[in-house]
Amino acid sequence: MKRNLGNLTIIVLVFLTVIIWLVFPPIKEGVENYARAYAGEVLGSVVIVLMSCSLFISTRPKWAEPFFGGLDKMYITHRRTSTSAFLLMFVHLLTVPITIVNLRLGNYLGMIAFLGIVAIVLPTLAPRIPFLSRLTGNTYEGWKKLHRYIGIFFIIGFIHSLTVKALSAFIAINWVQIFFIIGTICYLYTEVFGQYFKKYLPYTVEAVNHPNNATTEVVLRAKKDTIKKQRAGQFLFVRFLGSKELNESHPFTISSAPHENVLRITIKACGDFTRHLFSNLHAGTDAMIEGAYGMFDYKSGGRKQIWVAGGIGVTPFLSFIRDLETGLAYDVDFHYTVRHREEAIFVDEIKEAAKKNPRLKTHIRFSSTDGSLTVEDIVKNVGEDIHEHYVYMCGPLPMVQSFEKKFLDAGVPSGNIHYEEFNFR
Ligand SMILES: Cc1cc2nc3c(=O)[nH]c(=O)nc-3n(C[C@H](O)[C@H](O)[C@H](O)COP(=O)(O)OP(=O)(O)OC[C@H]3O[C@@H](n4cnc5c(N)ncnc54)[C@H](O)[C@@H]3O)c2cc1C
Image 1 (tube, helix red, strand yellow):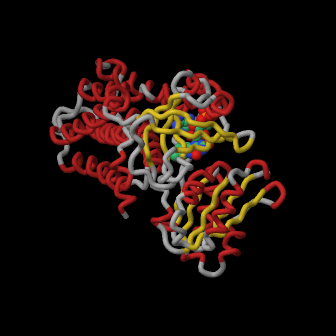
Image 2 (spheres, protein in one colour):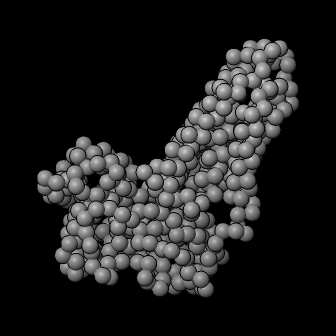
Image 3 (cartoon, protein in one colour):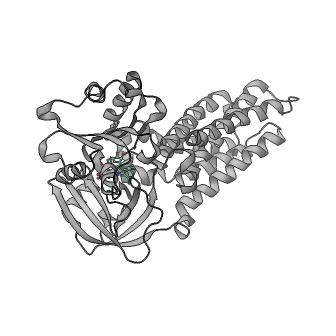
């Protein structure tokens, strides 16, 4: 329940906005096209409420994680609130009664805000359209830079609402102003003054290892203070100083155990940053760390568990296994699947942990020779009581999504299924 409180609050805020407009309607006298103007303002208000929720999530408030189920889940909410605001903005534009003859400054500002937000959001929704991908250089970093300007158009959008010929509805307008203030503060915090409050801790790269020809293990040692309150399976944001290509903040799971006096992250080379890191990162490089975040924690589940790792999605499970100092208090079937034998990392360590912990049963699968891992295989292996199991998954999004559906069909309660989202876009 607590994990849904964040989303529930957002839904309540949206409904409350509509209810306030309905309970305290604007004055009708002398207003042309009253119904359309009224509906347009309600829609515009909901857009501001949803956008300020998105801007709030962008501040990455650690204290709010328990109410969403972790920062990765907060970014799913961010995607949903932003997409809903984006779509409602179109409906708002089509609903409000505007004519070319009586355009005011506020209308022009509204147009600027609308076009600015469209230009920023469309490459997120349709990253593969060639014209749009030119705006971002087809890279995540380019997309992130473009995304930074969204708050400016949010502010222009609000000034637009103050300068157009608005309906007279004192309470509703004041209610929306609260969200505008919250959204603006959150945006300024994220982009301008947050760096003075957030904890970016200095670390040094102590070692760089290559467990296979596409993966880098980076060992990081704190220069002074270490990141606090770390649980196995959490993730951090890291950037490396001294090289433009590596000085970008990227999220990675901490694959070491919390009791280790270094942090280890294990990174698959899949794009510009991670490939450059594979070839160029060396010991002695300075790094800045932000975190730890996330609530992917098997200890919150029941006695019988199924862990599923696909490819580099093994990293949180490495952390779980490395954390087994006092033995495992759960019965775990751990399925680790990769395409080829060479892609599997730290296999000896995983097998060694299974030998020491009889309650941990490992199943390593190479799909190119053994065929793809399926939920049917996992269920057959578990037996009758699949509905009593807790499932923890991390891997490629299509695999995780299809497994989630099949586990539900097999009778695993939805509250028992947990997965780590490796994608913030
Ligand atoms: C919570 C979390 C934990 C992760 N843990 C690991 C891990 O342990 N090991 C591992 O190899 N990978 C992990 N990832 C994925 C990793 O962050 C991306 O693969 C990496 O950032 C890709 O960067 P790139 O420039 O090389 O690739 P690109 O081709 O630029 O990006 C590939 C995709 O990665 C994501 N991505 C890229 N840059 C960022 C960024 N700065 N912030 C957020 N997402 C980004 C985007 O979805 C993008 O479409 C994790 C991601 C998340 C969200």
